[in-house]
Length: 83
Image (cartoon, rainbow, N blue to C red):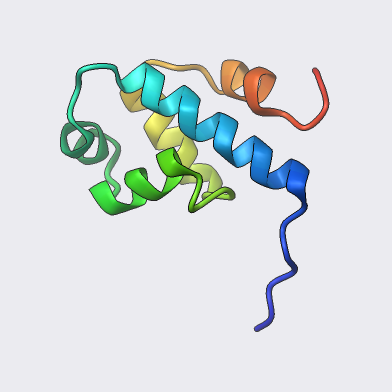
């Protein structure tokens, strides 16, 4: 399967998501947040650093719940187009 390259805007959105999650994590360890969300610490690390700019919806939803963020807030702060 060949994956279509991401646009610069999609990469930027992934970086915004990563920063938002990292900021929301605060002093909590990456391992603690990942465990609470049911994902691996490596997955969280990749998302936070922008190396996984298009994570699965349910991964993002689980991380948002673990961090006390609403999906509406994530969309508003990470969308390509202002909502």
